[in-house]
Length: 164
Image (cartoon, rainbow, N blue to C red):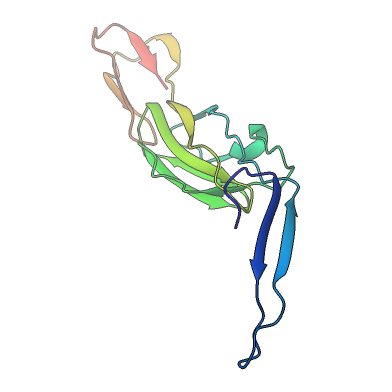
């Protein structure tokens, strides 16, 4: 096996033996024309909301000098949510009610060698933004609104805004 990245010739000799007597010394020369280059992963950034599962094609911006087909390996656990490899892409599910930034890593592989560890950053926004429709018409104010997904909005100044 040649050293990683070696291109050139390698020579070795051997002497065949039939169990009784040695044969002629034979020389073998192997020409190594090229070696496989590791794929290059490029950081990914995407956005979603706290109630939407995302399918992220993390390999779409990664490259391989040898034009090998890339696969995802070494997928890490995200900081907020879950990630699984599905059909050559990453299926990311955000943590319920979490709003902010989540990250995870993966390694592109060309079937022969791993590339660099690559980071995916997901910006997660709130899936429920209350709308303001002027003042309360029936003498009641809604002070807290809870949205599906667990996010809560607080009308802390208790003005006459209402939320739907």
